[in-house]
Length: 111
Image (cartoon, rainbow, N blue to C red; front, side):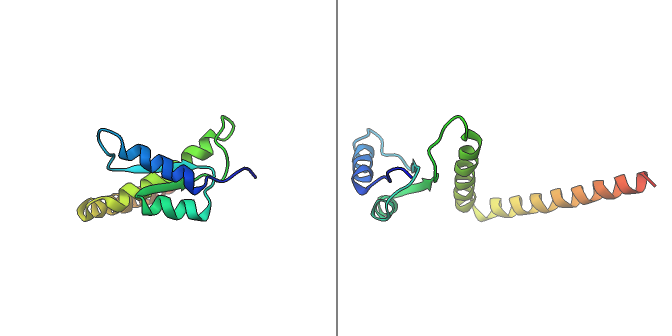
């Protein structure tokens, strides 16, 4: 199953980020697994936590990419201004309607 990241690792990473010339606006901690205290500490220290559930390798690179992409997408959509979120929703709805229209056109043209 592998060892989980513990709180001491989070404390070290937090200390490292505090000593940078410019403190990052966004801190993301990506790991296979964290202990509960480590997760709570990371979140309290302002980290975005992404737990992969498995070690990243060339064999699972696509799955790992999807996990990270999903988390970051949700994060950025969540912090987008409401007006931008509204446009994204309208765009999805228009896209679905266009897909339906294309299917109807294909169906009619094959009669």
